[in-house]
Image 1 (spheres, rainbow, N blue to C red):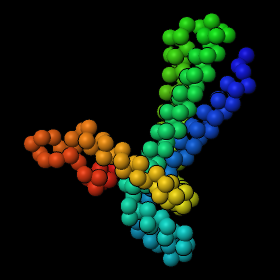
Image 2: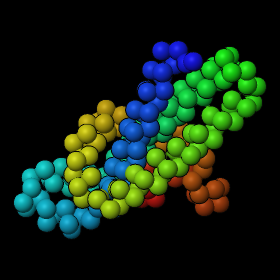
Image 3: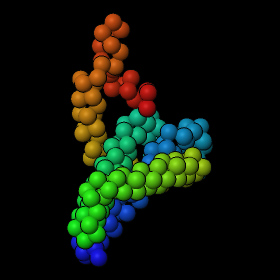
Length: 180
């Protein structure tokens, strides 16, 4: 039987997967929403003005959502792996390889369905509604974590040239934003 602390870690993992799903859904909605539609909505709903500000610098907000969903996903995967390895190798007598394999299989399925297909589908189907709802939290998170994601982009540029030696210097942050 799993310990109470292991149970809490599993619940935390579920919460992190749900959070990551919300972030992926918001990220998808920000990429899908139409500027024209939001301009139209802003005449009726002042909250849509916030979303227009996001659309003016869409890559910045998408980068933050991507970063946070990655943190949540990796943390949830690590916690599930820890709990399964501890429980299956200790109480159930499984070999460590089998425990790790089961953790990988579980988290690949969860990640594909709960973090890949479902939130992206919702983000596409309900882009306006989700983007409007996520605009305020996204602005807060971008203000808080924007410098960190910018630093990570700079580090990524330093490690992987964007254009190669013959074509010029590393990709700029603006070029990366356009790609996103």
